[in-house]
Image (tube, rainbow, N blue to C red; front, side, top):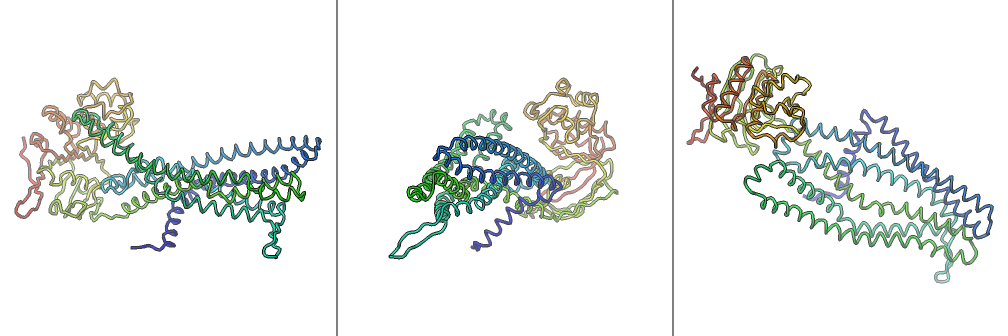
Length: 582
């Protein structure tokens, strides 16, 4: 379906405005507007000093032509004060702009991280593959958006004010241009203004025509760079497995392929940039001599002096430069537009996921630790995993979930955790009770072992004695000396050590309900028995839900929820039954 160009442009501007507007209406708006007003005032001051310097050009060069030494000395002193004022204003303009950029970036980074992390959006976007490289969009694109928006908007404002200030000067000092055409005398008042306008229009059109592919190429370049960087990070995260598989050659091939995309796209950027530089450089260099060529006839006829000629050249340069803002900023505009497109895509994906409403109803109910009413889960494509389930758990119950691989055991735990939206039914749980989920591969943040042990809680909530004692009871005594050592512990610990560390977390946090999803798969039988025994002894009133394939852990549970598959009807059902007491 084709879209009308006007609507497309309008929607693009709405996307840009939706990115820029929130900060200027936020709780930080007074500081932001105060700094922006100060920056604008300094920008106007630089234009005013440029006007004074333009007048200085006329007086100074007239003094040179007339060999007026006293005026020459006075103008040198005058220039010194103007230059000092210009330097101070420029320094503080840059300083305030950088400060405002960081305040804006900090605010937007926090907002975007909130959007990404709340309601498990980060989980669903990765699951649905709806956003590529969200880390790059938050880390790099927000920086590019804030800096680009400020620099481009302030540059445009400065160009507009400069144009308004100098176009009147150029109009008055350039005078009229008269010439004959077919026996008719034609006079063009302020002819230098029209020459500057024509020169800027032709140059802007040429640069736009040559450089318009840069927007798409810049977008692709950031995408390819992020993919390559992600590939390198994946090798770091999975170094042990890759080394065991001896998969270095395969990884090298994939990285070479990703980098080849970078190289090919970069060469395309280089070719467009080369053509763009030819046009813009020729345009800029010819602009230096152009006002002298146009104003020279009046100078050599004696209509104007050297000072006036230099003033015309200076004013023409300012007017032409202001009119050529688009040319000078085109590359930055292309990069900024690509950045806006990526952030707009991020926003759309997050809003779509946030707007999705699960058919699974989550309710708070203090009568039972957990109750599932007519709960049926599906895959994202709509395929049903199992028939509706109706079960309940009371405080202190311990249930084992068993069944063949792929029947939906882990998915059931995800639905109970509130992160699996596909399905229907009701999940009732006491929201005042502390719940803890231990997956098969436990997450271990980068930092000190103390922080890794207490995650997701704050380490300050536990004493050294508690942490050291828990490590010993979970057979991790050899890690006690490293409690305050920082590192990537997911790489330093074996899978078995990581799973015992997860059990240590459970002992520290003391949840009311604990969910174990193959949380002992990397442990030997004896260690698995000790971990379960430790849980039952230390937390006797805790409700326990375990997903496990080994029957050896059944003795630590009272019930079994078993998934069975009817091969004829291709249906999976869950049946609850009591386990024998050992």
